[in-house]
Amino acid sequence: MIDADDVRRIALSLPETLEKEAWHMPTFRVAGKMFVTVPDDRTSFAVRCPRHERAELIAAEPEKFWVPPHEASSAWVRVRLGALEDLDELRDIVVDSWRQAAPDRLVEAHTEARDHPGRG
Image (cartoon, rainbow, N blue to C red):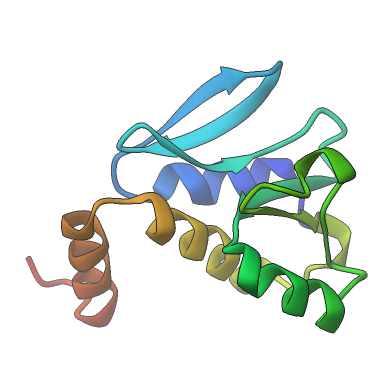
């Protein structure tokens, strides 16, 4: 079963990611920008998501994605851990959020490393 420790492990595997506690919960940041938070209940996590894409995402998979009322005006979406299909899906979601926060140089290097393993 996928859990908050998997979120932590994947987030910290991304270049220049740091974990920092804020609001009594772990947050993960790249270049000083948050891209993942894990709320206290550890049954979900929050990631960056452009607001114009968020409504579509929630409408397509409401059992997986949601937004609490106090975050409605933000560019974040919550993801229910129990609704994820596998670790690959979790990784895709976390990496997408990281790419939104990371500087271009890191995104380009990460893409290059993924597309050409063993190089560089």
